[in-house]
Length: 76
Image (cartoon, rainbow, N blue to C red; front, side):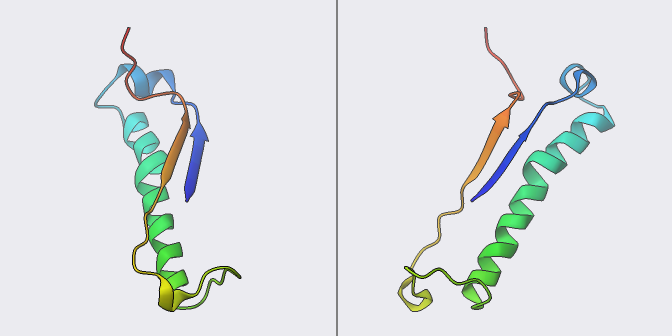
């Protein structure tokens, strides 16, 4: 599981073509998904261990990304 909590700048919220929006999406979503994939690879390679989990018994991994803070779109 990866968690991101942060505020989107006013510029990112108001200018869809701004570099600020691209930066926010990179930090809050794309970057966190890469970190999540890296940790899954570490787990499957045996670099991460959890006492209650045997890697051989794992059939599926359900990645979870939680974004807390400002939403990208707000409906009123």
